[in-house]
Length: 124
Image 1: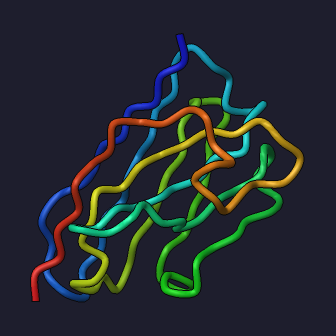
Image 2 (image 1 turned 180 degrees about the vertical axis):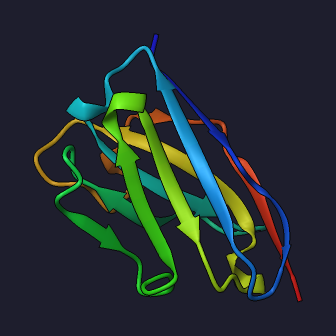
């Protein structure tokens, strides 16, 4: 059974950094495009960043470009999200997701395996 487990969330001040991890089991992430999404209070789940199976292609939302970096270690079956220069508007539950496909998707509907999420709160 495929499972994704996120960790690394927490409370951080504006301008701070966090590194999220997503450990997969039941699948080999080297066969999947991987992504991070987030859902803020009262908002729909939105795309943050995605990476192709070998990590050669990445896409990021404009709101996080230059601040967030997705990376993957296929040998450890783990995906990471390095978040720098955090802002209060980054406060959300962050979800890891996996997709079968040629190009890493940027839509919620592109992904069929999801983690349970980890809370990130940025204080002003």
